[in-house]
Image 1 (cartoon, rainbow, N blue to C red):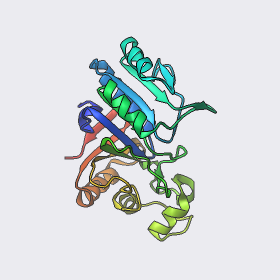
Image 2: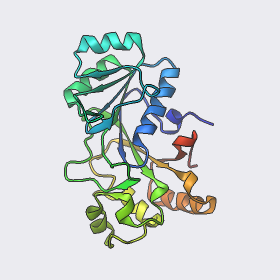
Image 3: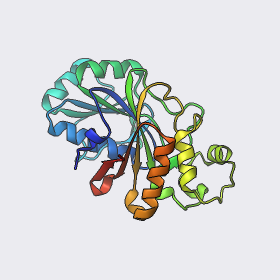
Image 4: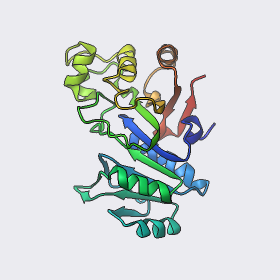
Length: 240
């Protein structure tokens, strides 16, 4: 099986993860693989992300100076940076700080969206927060939403109701998920001409036949790289 960094086609520079359904776990899986290759990696956020566990990262810096970052990367090739630490989360850094990180580490992985632990979302007015220097955007979607009422599985449900033209009790279908992925007011918002890959996570929760049909339909509507994954199960592959 290919590494996740290969499936997602992650290159040096800034990669931003948006959407819902496994952004943080995907980011730290990528970071772990890069660290195993002795690459220098900084994980950060332009919104908020939970303070990492010791298994995810041993060094967390809050609003560090450039020299502190350089010294930390000499101690450990994977570090996490936030602007502040509040209520168990680290908070957003600026574009200028990310540009500084890019000078110091080979890879900068950014969590650029919030989803309140829900598998799907429609971005709010000021979302996602994609740094200017981003070279690649990874859109994450959780299949846990399939056949579940919109009101129970979608962050910013009112926006999703408007986009899909449905009620809150509507059961999310495969085509609904594809619409969210491909819409310019959905998960395409803010990406513009940047390179992108879609990561369909939580595939272990749906039947193989359903997944196959969904994959083929998505491939017809989405022309960039598609990765199917069960990140927490350690499984991923590209759709051919």
